[in-house]
Length: 338
Image 1 (tube, one colour):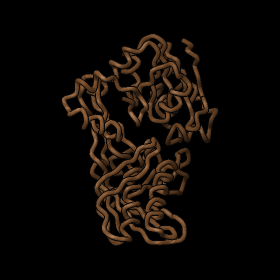
Image 2 (image 1 turned 120 degrees about the horizontal axis):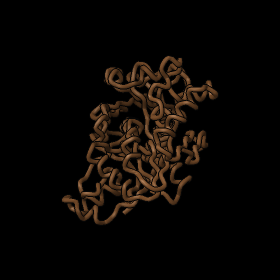
Image 3 (image 1 turned 60 degrees about the horizontal axis):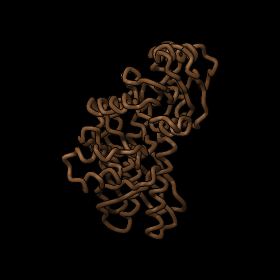
Image 4 (image 1 turned 30 degrees about the vertical axis):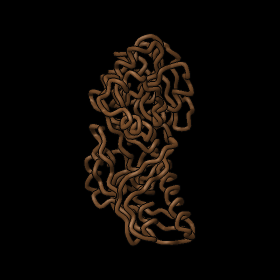
């Protein structure tokens, strides 16, 4: 089987080791909600804040025509996300799905939306969605912290509801009553997002992560003679393009553990935020910048960028380090130098 979210091949023996009924496991893999590990154990993916916001928005629009109890929306990986909801009289509620990511503090958070018919499709961010106060983030300064990909997903989901009901369009306001409170447990205020959480997500799914998964990924890395260790969804996409003959493994922020497990032809490839801060965790200290991306955007010749990259190369012990931008441009490449 192929995992439809990260496009990796799942060995049949992993599925055979699982104690979950095979049909149930295969269905969960196909709809993106389950991840099977090398020992047969199973972890649960969740939906991103972007997907949950899209579901709430579509629920609100559909409820203009009557009560709504279940909704599905598109995701960027080509499969649909769906969940039970509550919708009536233009008001929709979706609760963010539980998952097996150990640090996802937004699990169980209520996303709400209010909708009314209008010309075209308009999306407003209400209470609990943060406002961007600095440059360098995907959302523009002064705008709500809804990244472009989730906004596309939200608008596409609303468009489906508008078409289904035969409306001219819809005006939808999304809000999170507890968003401001939850945001205090995130790093948002430090990176320039205030008064709420960010609406994020590249694939539409939250990858599970716990120590058990880390062990399984260690096994996968050790079994690969050619491996790319990457930091996130965008890193996976460009790593697959840049190194098609390598096994691509999502290491996230645990790059050091992954490097220790790797051998042979090893590459670290990812966005600057994680790769360069792995090289020098203190690179932003007293710099005047909130994020690495902000530094790159406003001061691309800053010496701290080169210093962090050189430290990453040193930490990698000869591993090739490749830093890519969100559009796939290669910003830095050690070429395997030691």
